[in-house]
Structure formats: C-alpha cells, structure tokens
Length: 344
Length: 185
Figure 1 (cartoon, rainbow over the protein chains, first blue to last red):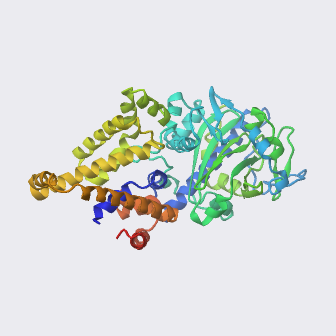
Figure 2 (figure 1 turned 45 degrees about the vertical axis):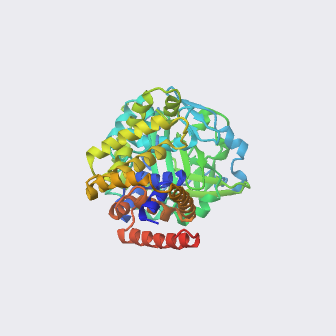
C-alpha cells in the first residue's frame, strides 16, 4: 500500500465525520486556551447582554421612572417566593406541555416555524440541522457590537439577512465567531462555573431578532468530551428564563432567586411563550438551545435554567444563575447595555 | 438560498444551481483546494471543475450534506491535479504518458484487485475514524482531509500545537495497528 492509498481512503471518510470536523475546525477560530475562554466569554457576555438589554428596553417603555440596574445586594430575593420549580422534576414541563410551546411565532413578519423535532426555524423549509447553521451564521449579521446596536435600534433585520443565515460559516471571507480580541476586558467570574460548564466547548450566542418586548437569541452549545456523557443523556431541553414578573404568572424561587417558570411556559400562547426559553434540539454531538426573553421588570433578578429531559422523562437540570449578572452589569458591560436603551 | 433549494435547482437542471453553489460554497471549496495545491490558478480551475462535476453528478447523486459533498469533490479534483503536476515534473509528461500506454498491455485484473483493496481500505478507515474520540477524529481529518498544518489545527481548536502533534501521532499509530489487524497492511 502507498501513502496515496491511505490519503484517498481518508478522503472518503464518512460524511458525518467530515462534517463534524468541518464544524469544529472551520466554525471556530481560536488562538489557544485564552482565546478559548474568551470565546466562551464572548458568548456568555453577549447572551447576558441580550437579556439585560431586554430588561432595559422594557424599562425604557415603562410609564414609571426607570429603576436603576439590578442591585447585587437585593438581586435574587423576593418576599413572596414560594416554590422551587427549577430544581424540581415534578415541576418540569411534560413533553406535551413543551410541545405546546412550539406554536409558530410571528416576529416582524417572519414566522418562526417549528420543525419535526421541535426545533425552531426562521423559515419553514429549514431543517433542524440547518437551523444550527442559521444560528451560527447569524453572526454575519451582527459582526460586532456597533452593528448589533445599530440593528437593534433600527428595527432588526431584513429578508436578506435572513437569507444569509442559511449559510454555514465561511472560512475565508466571513469569520463567524465573536472576536475574542474585542473582549479583552472581561474575565470569568467565579460564580459562572455552571455557565462555563454549560458553554464548555463552543458556545455561540447570536441575536437574530429584536422586538420592543422580546429578544430572540440563540445559543449553540457543543459540550466538551468531558461532559459528553451527561449531554448524551439529554433528549430534550427546556430553557427557562426567570424574571420578576409584572404580570399574573406564578412565581417561585430557585436557589433563592425569584422566578416564573414552567406554569408560564406550559401555556400554548405565543405572547406568553415569548417570555421564556424554549428548547430546540439535541443530538449526540451537540446541544442547541434558543431563548426568547421579555422580562417584565428591569430590577428583576435574571436566572437562566436549562432543564434537559432524558428519554425516560427524568429531568436533568443545568442552571446558571443571576448572581453573575449584576457584576457583569457593573463591571463589564454597563455602557454597552445602556447604549441599547431606546431614545424616549 | 438553502441547500435544499440549491439541490432542487440541480434536479430541475437549472443552471442557477451552479451560481448559487459558487456563491455559497466558493470560498469554502477554494480553501479546500488551496490546502492541496498552493497555486491560485490551479485552485480556481479545480473549484470550477468542482461546480462542473457537481452539475454532472447531481442527479443522480443527492448529497445529504452539500457542503461536505462539494468539499470532497474539490479535494479529490485538487488531489488529481496535484498528482498530475508532480508526474509532469518528474518525467516531463512522457513517463506517465508511457505508463498509460503500456497499461494497455497489462492484465486489468490488477486494477480490479487494487480497486477492491482500495475500497476495503476506505471502509476500514471509515470504521476506524468512527470509533475514535470525536476530538481525535476531528484532528485527524483536519490534518489529512482538510490538510491543515498542525499550527493551524492548534489555532483552530484552541489546543497547544504539541498536543495536536501528539494526538495525531497516537492516532496514526492506532491506525497502523488497526490496519494490520484488518490484514490490510
């Protein structure tokens, strides 16, 4: 046998393996361990930005004066907290309830359609796998903060932008990942461990749509092998954004943090649905989650809780909680968040 | 345009399929060709050949993952181009020509056996790769499918280069053991 034979044999490796390698190698550019951490941070900070921005956007629309950003001393406490829905399996949404969430949602004339496996997509033709492409390529639309801000303030995205979402990451003319070098001023807070786990490997956040009361964001999660077994067991995932609600939704606590959770998301109501994370899809290699978020109060504590359900229905909870948010707000990105506040 | 729509154009024999494919995957296929050829002119020609080949093969081919399909075409076409060029360098074009002419005199049974063994080898390599840990497999394909230098592999994965080299070395060793076990060496 000649080396050429082996070369040719490798060249005919199974598609799925080549695709995975392609995703890993061409879907990310990093410069080492630091860049890896920064990439995770980029995702985390951007994700946080969307959520807190949503808080501030709502704040800007309230008739009453806008309260200051979350106070770290008071964040996470409410006198009427009564339950612990995030940690309690029995409180997790049933499959039927979760499915109810997957009603089509119309956003600025674009319909988010559900796919067969419950994944959301922006157009009905898109496939679950391709949806991941949509997530990733959304970064083309928001190459940097200024662009993101501009798009937010000027009404979101065009049809052409949505078309662009279908493109898988390019390797030459479009680096689709947040540039870690633009986030030199951030470091990983200690209490982000859960988030770190959640986002371990590669996680990208992309904002794809904004409405006055709603942020649509997507997180792509590719766990490291270290966590692969845990992720493998998760067959579906519900992501819940927890806020201090201003409406009639039930409230509870999770780790002492006020939340409004499953009762809320179990309602088959598009408007209700908007306020919460939902699950997209999982497979053995990757987990995907999307969120929609419309917090009711800027002074609310923000907790994000991912609940995975195994095939036998056992709930599996991963959470990263709100303690980090005030720190981020104050330390890292306060100006960034505030800059999104609409002009009255 | 999404892949499904592009494939529909191929199915309908609509030539926009080529332009849409080139728009969407031109940069990607050029990168694949570049790693094989390191010659801008050859790259461009190979990428164009990729579009033509795709046009000729779809249908009946119906790729599950268009990106991978096109990447594979580009790699194969670029590899052939590279081998041709190397042959020309060695023998001024006459040696391979002579070999081709003499091939008519040789029993074609060898080709059939070689094809069979190549097929076996391909299947064995596929099985081997499938059993590797995901990261090791990705690195292996990154080096030997995408032909990235180890420095670039390290940069793209966030791993240390020495670590990448070690993983590749161990994987090559494992592959050798596997192929020996499969009686392919």
